[in-house]
Length: 280
Image 1: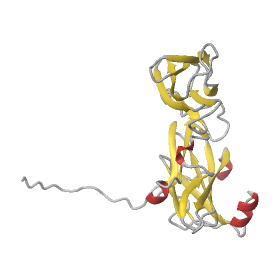
Image 2: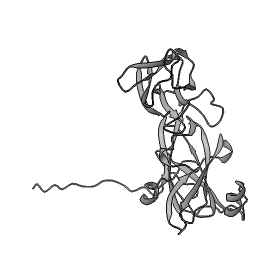
Image 3: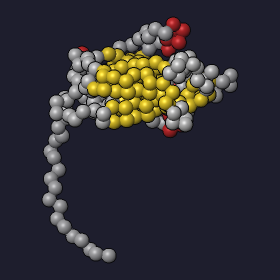
Image 4: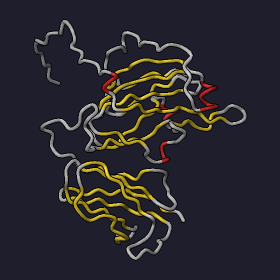
């Protein structure tokens, strides 16, 4: 083994530069994540949910690329939950106690005290996890600059594995009036594709896709043998978020059988495929 010696000339900084915090007034919207737990008659946990759904219930939440949002974690459970947002740095704004019983009965948030300012280690600092106490609404503000699919979840392993995890998708749209949009000089963003709503589906499947500039797209549905079942769109679309629905029929309008199908989005520079399941 070789003995290596060297001089460390690194100089520790005398202070840290903290980027400015987000102004809550710059938020495009406020999004709630209601935290619930299902118990059996003996009080044992049967599962935890965000917005009354588990992870496998499909993606319902779409965030505009480049926008700022305030997220409220509304904790109706008896536990403290360290809530994490993937690949997002946020500011913790405050925590406010509320009447849990009133909320469960009516769906209305009735605050029972003033907002509590975060402690010094949280205030005006960048975080990727916020402690959400029981009986409190915990608010954070973030800017969403990375397109794609992500999740927010409780960082307690037993809780996230027991379904306190929900997906969301960040997509570009035409609207850049709130909290910014594309950053100047960035390379074009690869189009995104997702199936919105519960899976498996009955009746119609809602398929959302986005492009960051006007271009030709073809969106088709294929069966498990790789055969094209139906073309939903084949033409030029504007930049932004779009949605199509598939009613479970083929090109001739006949209903197809239950099973797994694949939605394929093709553009001149990319191709993406996502799976969906039809039940009759």
